[in-house]
Image (cartoon, rainbow, N blue to C red; front, side, top):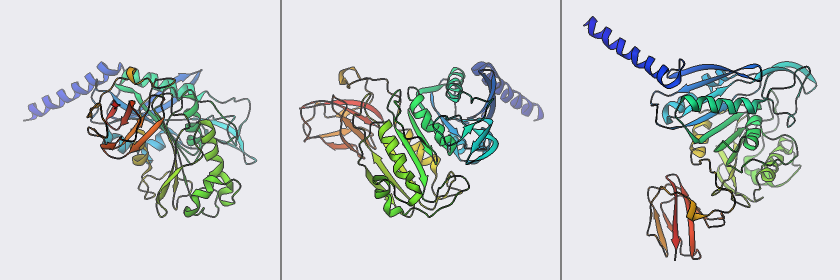
Length: 398
């Protein structure tokens, strides 16, 4: 029996070694991995979680989680819930670490870890330090991980909290050519300026009703007034920041100023903004999530009833990176879902769909909903694109 057990253990060990050397050329393992890389002469650290159900050769999504001020990748690996979600959903999770700087913030000088989001920030990095190129660092992580693991490069997602939320906002502009969707939590654009993203992509911003920043307190903003808080400037609640941040997303991503509002005032409300011009590609959206009874912390279902990792990933995974530019040419789009009947006159069935978005040939969103059966009788004659949780399709309306 001991001989048999030894043989089994040996086989398991050989299997692990084969996995590490054959797939990666270095020692990688299921679960927690710590890696370093040189970026512009500075040693940078990041943690990678590989779920047990990962199989080399089967492409899976990649999801970043960026820590906040004073944190690091390992703290967020251990604490915020993305590791557990990675095991459940089967994606690769990455937790990078920022660098430590001497900074001035609120008149105080401290030495602390920060993502370099300058100049769009309320703090200043003191010389002789000049701030690392964190965008370059994150891009190199994608290149490194994608070269060693089977990553679906059309499904790379990024989320961040606090100063990591500020970095997520920066990434939604400067890395929008490689990211499929971005979530910023309790930190976002700071300066009143307009950026031009490399590609307009789905973005989400989440904040709590009691969140006035690290260590700060203030009067909770009434959940029932969210419509006004997002629509009217200079309201006293949260110093008008809810409106300011909404306007920055509207300007940066060419969004309509109106929004739809759903949710529960005792849990969370979600305002959804649609783009003025959905292209390039077949559309995107902005979600503004306002969470009840939440101060400056990242809710993960344990420290707060809202499970942000689960909620955010469910939203992000609906989107994939699109390389289409200009107006949508339905004839050039490769499809992978079935729509019946096709051509159609009144009712279509999108096989297996839980939700859908339908766009005309100019890339304008004309219908959306949560069903596999859609009434298209009001649409003009023409070719239409359909985006659903199952993929992309097209149909002819006659």
